[in-house]
Image (cartoon, rainbow, N blue to C red; front, side):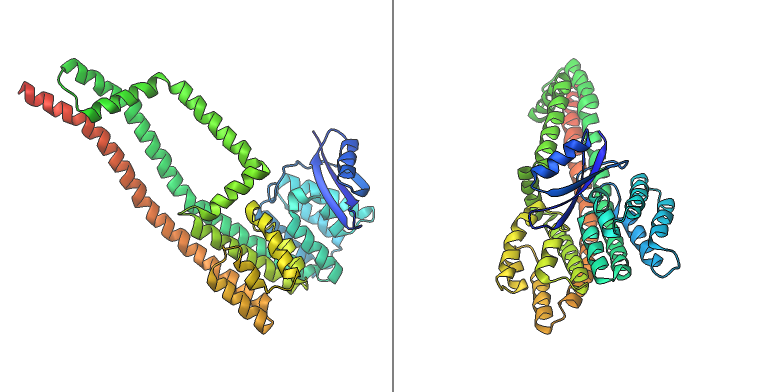
Amino acid sequence: MPTFTFRAYDSENVRVYGARKADSEGTVQKYAEGKGYTGVSVFKSETAYRAGVYKLATPKELSIFCRQMSVLFFSQITLMEGVVLLSEQTENKNLKTALLEIHALMEQGYTLSESMGMYPHIFGAYLLNMVSIGETSGTLDIVFGDMSEYFDKESKLRKKLASAITYPAILTIMMAAIVLLLILKILPMFGDILRSMGGEMPAVTRALISVSGFIVAYLPIIVAVIVVIVILITVYARTEKGGIWFDKMKLNAPIAKFINRRVITSRFARSMAILLKSGVQLVNALEETKAIIDNKYLEKTFNEIIKKVKNGADLDVALKELGIFPPLFLKMVFIGQTTGHIDNMLDKSAVMFDEDVDEALEKLTIMLEPILIIVLSVVVGIILVSVMLPMISIMNAIG
């Protein structure tokens, strides 16, 4: 199905934008009107569509785009000419297409923020809202510069997380492959040899050979059950209830708890600092930031925090009730509020917790490597000993 973008107004006459796959413009029109929107304008797009933030353009690509946009304001090139020029520079097919379509919309009289707003599946809500703020305040050059730095740091953070996970994941896969090889191939072969030689086999050996025989006999069924379980978990995780449950687990998982909470703290501090420096009010900044945290459980509970701040609660007191922000961060927020420089304090907090994440990831990688090697050695050792013991006893009996 093709992708359609739309522009409309909500019940409070505020402009809203969206994108979705549909079989026709009429379907999108009905969808938007069904949500209570009025003044709906629908446009067909050649971009792909996938729900979620940063799916069709990576943080690195968005960082480069924002940096190039910020440079445009210091050149002699007009904004519309610059959009076309940037479309020629990017290698991302969907971003290239979106920029050309944005240029066409601007030719029809739409502003940059209005045109970009119809592509939330590519740019993400945070960047689009910041562009709108920059356009209103006349600080688009500053906003794009800040956004370039933000996405650059987000890209580096994701690379560090991926790098920290990659080695343990490879080691775990290799460990599982070795164990399966021993159980499915080596153990049955030794089992046949031991039976042909006669003699009593230890209980551990009999148990392992039984497990091996069971796995070999029912391997297709076992694989099918595992695949079905993985699919069910994936489908459940994509539901609203399942997404909230899994995101809550991420915050409380024994090993990942420390890292996840500091990653969220860093993202929250950095995005809040940018918004407050751009002149956004505290409550509005909290509204904008909750989606950037990338945790459905916190997004849901964040609404309560926003209500409390609206009712006059101090930010550090309201954030403390979430139970995920480190005490040091809350103290820094308190100091920022007291001194009237909360944006600068949030900036410093983001840098500090970035360093915390780096150190934690390094320690986690160093810690996991020997643990996985020890586990592999123990498992392989048990299998080998269970095979060798009866062999030795049979040899002694023959001797």
